[in-house]
Image (cartoon, rainbow, N blue to C red):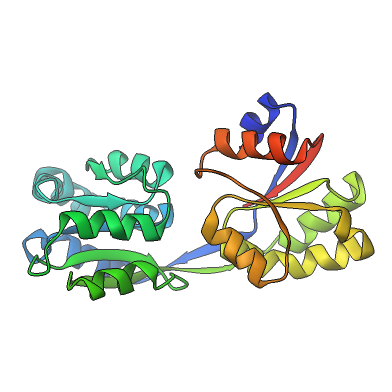
Length: 251
């Protein structure tokens, strides 16, 4: 993201906001070991793929995956919400579908257009803070979905220090970009404290509509929402809407 923003004449600083703890990995691999029990996979976060990659670091599991499981899962769809998740699906040897949807609502519509109510259950490795939009939409259409929490989201241990350092060295940023509702949750209080009355001068941007909704719910005026969750669209949106010289990004 900083590189893409730089191409648009924007100076960006990326500050990690979230830490992830992976859980239930044995249960995850047990389910991955039985592709015959499922009609396909659903991924709405790169972290779910990271959980699978951690599972596959064990030699015996990696061998089982490469020798038979991968091929058997490849006869079923692997639904994904965006390009970042799609690329990780490809890394484990599967073929992603739906990467252009961009958010959970549109992915749910895509899945509903391709699955039937009497189809086999879809396996959905996800985070503890997942939104209910996709599960609810599939349930309404009678499409069975089995959710498994494989990671938990917490505040990054260095978040407060990183933000304080940025504000003391760079001053109040011209713009702050949020990449997730969790980023808003963990970051906003620190930003408000550091900005004080100058927060009204900061232009806030969102990577997509879900994050924008979380920002609005927290009382943040959204100046820019990327048309699609890509570096190019975010950079173009910021340049067009804000005409900024400096930008601090939280991810």
